[in-house]
Image 1 (cartoon, rainbow, N blue to C red):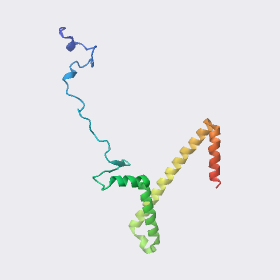
Image 2 (image 1 turned 90 degrees about the vertical axis):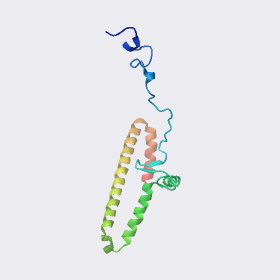
Image 3 (image 1 turned 30 degrees about the vertical axis):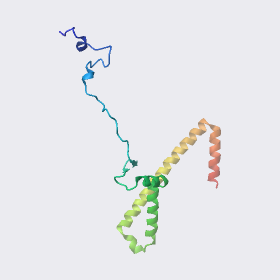
Image 4 (image 1 turned 135 degrees about the horizontal axis):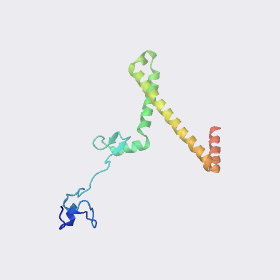
Length: 152
């Protein structure tokens, strides 16, 4: 039978916290005394590329470039320029396997871009339908602007 002389060891301590562990003060600290952690000290591109002083001689410059021209835009321009150069080659030189793989890559990218545009337009159409149902005057204003753009 449990002793009743020391209630803190035999019954919950309903007057203090936490009642289920009366000797909490004897536990080591669960959190460190000093919380000093850098959260993303560099920067991350697409959760794949982290640009820091360790892998770039000038991460600030890269950040400024990407702010003006995304990696996708930069690669797109390089791909377009390379495709133009390949098109200038005589047909006999265009039969290189690397050029065929490049053409496949370019076509896949264009397909992805087309599908993304279609998804955006589907979302836009759904938003427009919602606007028609919830705010007729605003819908009419937007529809009028869209018609003017389409009639150009």
